[in-house]
Image (cartoon, rainbow, N blue to C red; front, side, top):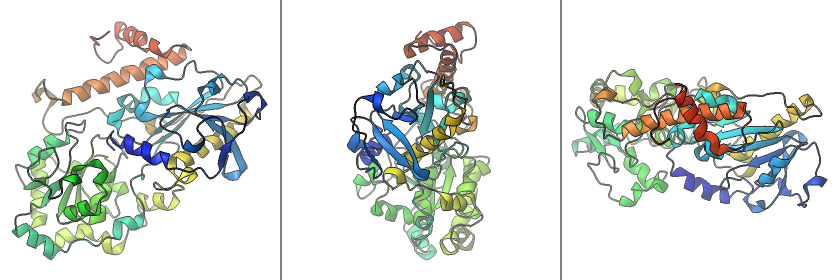
Length: 454
């Protein structure tokens, strides 16, 4: 999801209520249970217990497990208990890392937003630094790939506009394809692809990006209107909806896919290569990766625009339901959290209890000196590819094009990830030494590229 979502996320968290947590009742940390693990939420704007944010909270999780949770960074001084620091991916910066990392410190990552928000987290070099991960990728310890799917019923509950009505609207001048996007010039390079596609098929583009048509209600441009029923009505009239993510990474899937599935406009998807695993039915999504070029894709869309029965096959899931053999169905049926839930029912609260459970499981392997047996997250929980042009070659793109910024940002990310890993191996105490470590890597010839700012 785009970075602007963070502001709405903060507002949402302020409404959360933790039904199972209470203020522990003592500011003197010496009287707490010695063996009770602590969860420290590092980001000041992200805490699933906003009503009790002044101190330690007793967190009670399933299976009668108890941890202490807090935003008080004094918890890092604890010597005789496990402390897991929860780091929020979008706002995690290597030069602000919780150093020194003591022998009883664990790092837990939660990263549900777009890879473009923090390219440092796209690299395997940093994966070994986290003991627990909750990301949009299925390989993370606590995957939240389906965070934008309210329910299976949401995909099938709304009846699509009939093909007869869509054809009538086509004859009145409505394009077969709609594009609604106001976040332009992103790492997925989606606008360049759409611009090329427009040469071969009509596309109504309502947003700020490649705009060629206005919404009757211009308020629907706003990001807080992306789930508005009025916007749904506009999009539902189109045969095809360009559902292009702002960054490309396996399992990074947003409302851009879910929305057209809900309204019954066939998604033409560009994003995760694994998208068909998350489709309600195999023949319900058109994946741009299956076509050699925008022109090749347009040939299919034009043919479907002329063939009603072939087009309607893509909407069969509206009648038959989500395929029970699909990964989407199985994941949704097993999901223990609700994206609209509160407290422990939301994925933040549920992940918090997952971390608590894992720390309790580690207790048996801890020596009296608090030497923690390493428990590392999967490298595949991060690991996203570098930005590439959606059309043509990078050498053909003007040096002034903003796309080069994203390529540079990605390279900065690998340097920061590698430098932070070096710092932890050296047991560094000052996170701001990051720049010295980056310069050292560059001088050794191991940096991603020349950093003129050093």
